[in-house]
Amino acid sequence: MKALVITRFGGPEVLEVQNAPDAHAGPEQVVVKVEAGGLNFADLLTARGGYPGTPKPPLIAGREFAGVDTRTGRRVMGYSQWAAFAETTPAYPALLWPVPESWSAEQAAAFPVNFFTAYFAYWKAGLVERRGGARVLIHAVAGGVGTAAVEIGKILGIEMYGTSSSDEKLARVRELGLQHGINYKQKDYVEAIKDLTRGEGVDAVFEMLGGEHVARSVRCLRDFGRVIVYGAATGEPAILDPRILYAKGASVHGLWLSYLSQNHSIMDAAWKQLSEWLAADKLAPVIGKVFPLTEARTAYTLMQEGKNYGKIVLKIS
Image (tube, helix red, strand yellow):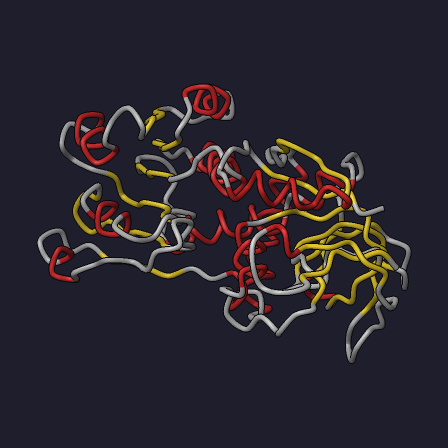
């Protein structure tokens, strides 16, 4: 089978499409014939060797996919830790979900990581049950998780503020339901939040930048607000003096889908809610670009440069 292989740790140049042995199901697994894969920032980290638990190369890349369960013939979308960007991949049934009938494989491949992550961010912030009246700042709002968070926030009645480097991207996300866009290249987002909320701040910040941005996000909070950290796109570890949390009773929470995906009860509860919204046609992945597997290096480079809007998808077969 054809597969995207990480030949050594490094940038997009380490990726090669190679022939690999067909996937075989391990204990309690099934084999999925893959049609498309969703590209995530975690895939960049995996290629660099910076994602926790990554095996030594060579290894098959990818953690999100859509295709056909060879055991049942049903269309599925799924999540794994690697080996998704190949014509066949092993998968655990608990991490496979049915594809809406009208969706393409590309749409399905763009769903699991973005929407589970966004849902859990609201859940960790205590905002899933609290309908309306809350404010959230979403960093990288025009990306995959960001656009998913806007769609979910619209359902929950959240007042949403989002950062991006482009007025064009912000305009497109406003069409999804974002109320307040902040171009961080033109205005400091801490000051922008202060101005837009009349000094009150937001209830939660969805933070995936790392470095100084964890502490700066804390400064955007109102009393008892929460920063939900789910990444470090800058590549820098968080800089945070916990004493800045004292005055507002604020808190910082970690969110790691790799860990949560092992808890079936939490994942099942999240899917129950997400599937209800899907059935009501309230959620739809935003896809910016689709690349053939042979152009995976270009896809990775686009994500690395932060120039993508919505989700980047690889067409596998």
